[in-house]
Length: 203
Image 1: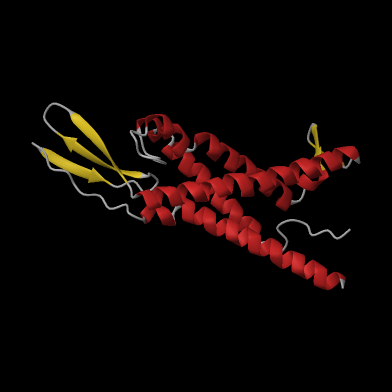
Image 2: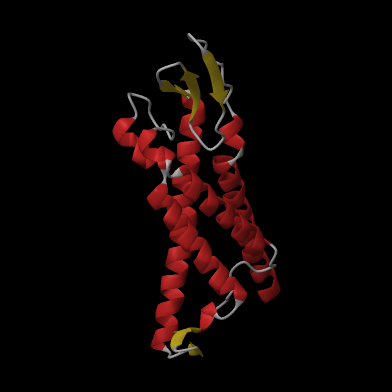
């Protein structure tokens, strides 16, 4: 009986984690290729087009003898909406689950004085295992991504384009955001490599 219950719980947990990982990959990579074609703009002088995969709008830069003008070409609304919804799910469900998990087990470890000394500090026992600290790093990465989310920073200057994630205010955030996104994806796959992403406990 215990084996059946544990196996069912294990399968549900793995299926949920795989679903979360799939949405994360879609929101950070796959959906960015949807409707991202750039048409070069011609003007008096030489024109060039740059395609940014991490942006919700493509950029066309026209160079003249006197000035450089950047025009933001919005992606299709369906693409922007899909990315927005996927990222909302990741921030609320995945990051929320990780934060709840660590708060719960940290409080339990402190309550039962299950602490381990690491250097000059004492940390909760559940963080000693690599699954514990890697999932904590993942939660920190996702929280940092939320703070740097280009869609939120572009909301103030979207020029009527809903869920735009490429704008002057968000352009300088693309590099740190992409670095955090890469780190989060590595941690997702690292946790996926373990047969028990979170400990299965039957009480």
